[in-house]
Every structure is written in C-alpha cells, then in structure tokens.
Length: 133
Image (cartoon, rainbow, N blue to C red):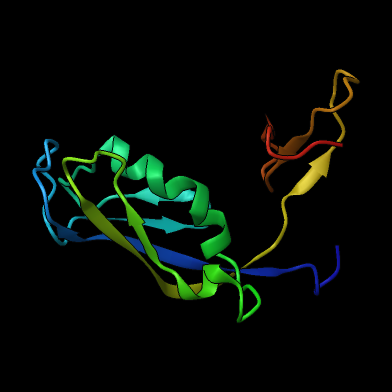
C-alpha cells in the first residue's frame, strides 16, 4: 500500500426529527444514533427502535461517501419509520469527515475461494463477509 491508499468517510448522526403519529417504541424527537466508520453507537443510556434503525441501514454507506452533486443521496436526508401508525421522520446528518486506510487483505488460510480474510496490525485474523476475492 502507498501513502495514497486512503479514502474518506463522513461520520453520521441519525436523529428523530418529527413524530406525527403514535410511536409504540416510545421514541422522542431528538433521539439519535451515530455511525463512525463501520461502528454504530448510541448516547449513554439511550435506545433506538429497531424498526426505525433498519429503515436507515441501506442508505448509510452511501451517505458516508461523497457522491456526485446531482445524486439524490447528496440532496435527500430524511427517512421514514416503516410503522405507518408512527409516522416518525429521521434526518441523516454528516457531522465530520475521517480519512481511513483499507484493511490489509490476506488469502483464506484454508484455501477456500470466494471468502476473504482481513487482519489488523496485531495480526488478528477474521473473516470479512463484505469482500470477496
């Protein structure tokens, strides 16, 4: 890898912007979670509705990246909870940018095809299901 083998991702805050119905998960305006790199976190003591969370997940990797200015991912930032009685709206905000290096890839130690293994600097090895050889 060279010094230029880096990429940037935005850290995101996903916040409940409005609730116009009856939220059965007791969500409140202002409830939020964060995504930094590939890690999701909640403020201390907070929880977040699984159904609202799952509505955002398909969009988050694209929102972490800089897209073409005309791409709808650059202009649209609201997601609706799938519960029709709830009518909860969440907003995805980019809060900061971070520079990352790709993880070092290693061949499968068992010689299997289509499976990738990644390791960190300490040499710990794990299966990376998101990347195939």
